[in-house]
Image (cartoon, rainbow, N blue to C red; front, side):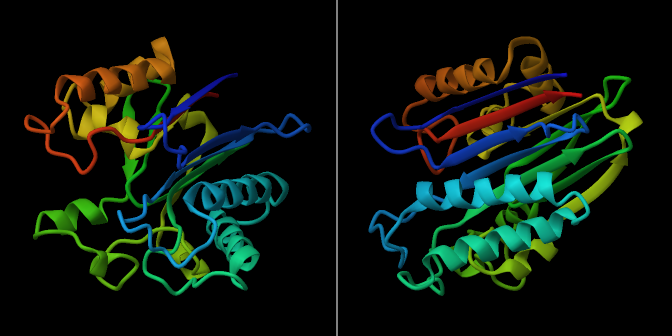
Length: 257
């Protein structure tokens, strides 16, 4: 088994809001990976929370990884719901969790053993699955893209019916994630990317998901992030490639099973 991960803040003077981690249980049976992309608050910084996004993603990511590993009988949606509940409980007494911009994150979760590979994707991070024949399939929650095709995506669409969803303070959101299970024999490797790393494909159009996966497999996650940084530097004002941030936090995990 080969596992590599890398993460880098978009701004070295600002805390990284991404979270990436992998666990391999002592039993030697399979493993799990968790990738979160914390949602950057508005310029005003108003989120109703005294803690901040990095605190939130660390809490949520840690809880999610622990539950995925220790609760192997629990569906991944239940793991996410319980992790959201635990994290909300850790700051409900001090923060306004009803605020639309309360700390929140996109999520990718994958878990595997000798028989199957389970996955969960919520919002615009990506999971890539490589089959034994080399075919790469992207598992995406495309609700933001579908909304963007109809017009501007605003805060009114966030965690609202007909909009898009993130892991924030409501555990019910777990039921809205993209989920699935594959036979272990149909999966050779997995990769998870926050949209800051996935912009190599989705923003800069340097290659498709299969080409992106090939970089991860051959050169590792840090090489992909380096390529993203090169693309960002070549278009610092976003004139050639429009994007919300000139540079974004980026994280990627590669797991060769």
